[in-house]
Length: 190
Image (cartoon, rainbow, N blue to C red; front, side):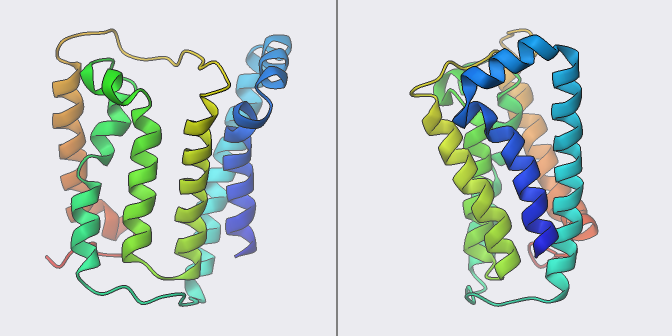
């Protein structure tokens, strides 16, 4: 569990700098330029790798917190339907992005809640709970901080359609093939 927590601290910590110290982040990024991007990317990648590694280790010694009923896997499958679409919509300006303002954060929140509903192990609660708390805090922080522009595709009428079709395609591929291969868990009976 130590490595999982360390990975989360690195990954979510670097992603939380804008929440807790936006002025410091902006000054440091301006002073360091591309070195800031490189350092940020390096810490993010290291944190992500350690999360994956630590989660794998933590799952070898499972600690049950609660036992969700089997039907919660179906609730999770339904909740996951918009997740990839919302994530993509953050980078494809259109009605979805305009409606939800921060669709990537919403996708992380839904992803985390969906998995907390269907999984009751301590490692899962730590992983998904951490991402849920971070996404809520990040979303709330926009009340007092200015949002920086993120690189995204040009605004086109097709962007929402692209986000929906691509998001649902990714969902199907992940649900039926990748989840079991990458995570080792078949989300729904085949």
